[in-house]
Image (cartoon, rainbow, N blue to C red; front, side, top):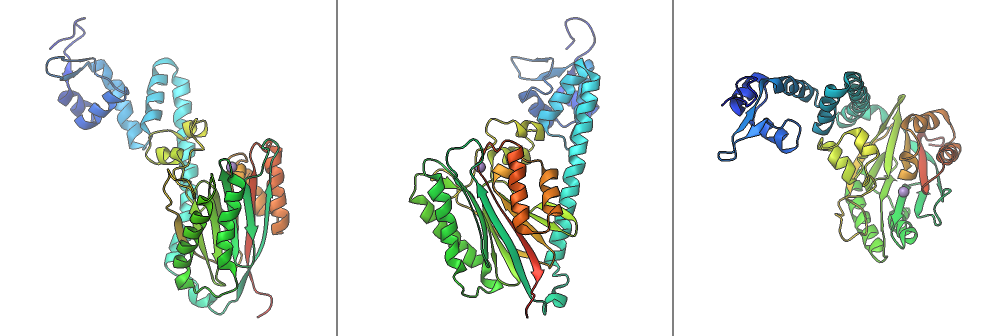
Length: 363
Ligand code: MN
């Protein structure tokens, strides 16, 4: 088959795939999503035909895929290449900066996990008595009429919850109250911690279900040597350890899942109309109640931050880190974090908890 304007012989999908070093399966997908449609498709056979001039775009797609760039962003870069090469270059550069920043954050998480799983320093620390110093604060913000966020910090429990719906405020309070039953003074063995947390979160969900509402919940239970973490929704837990600051929870949002699957770019995620849509929460009949539960191995010097999206969605990560790193006293740290949110206009309720793991002063 030859093209009508006589520019040359059209390529079959097989020939085009070989030359562009893309698979036939990939080419079909790129056609479906409009990234690289063939010049024409035979209406009778359904065979796709490409023209040689399309090879340049195809090669660019192949290179960008090798960088693991999401398809939506590749389409953007390819389109820009045809109109404004400088903008395309800027787009690639920005993508790579984000990859490097993300890699740095994951490097911190990896060394944390390696230390934790290999039980590093466990024998040294067995004799060491640790305790936590903590502070919690919640604020209505400047725009909302009610505060549906709740924060709690006690000797054994740290928690934030972000309620939503008609009765969001009593719902977030009920979730935390249900967890506080664990904080009744009885000893929780570290080996039992996960089960205790699972049971507690089930009770929390039942308590929340009594309301016309749902809530997120991010909480930590202190056993005296370990912190158990339970997390559902888009509130967050961060850890500052040895000068590294990283998020240890994963947002249960639709946008985060789309980002994980490479269906949208980080840029699109920031302005996505459904960016606050939760895929998991407590008390909502239509979403899954499937909390993340994990045991964190703690060290003297660790600082944990729990916060609702009123902080993390409105204050830049670098600013959160600056306050968490730069304020010694937990009570002052939570006040400063709320002040940072206020500086950004406080469009949402805010709740946060800061807790330090320190060597016990009395033995
Ligand atoms: Mn919120």
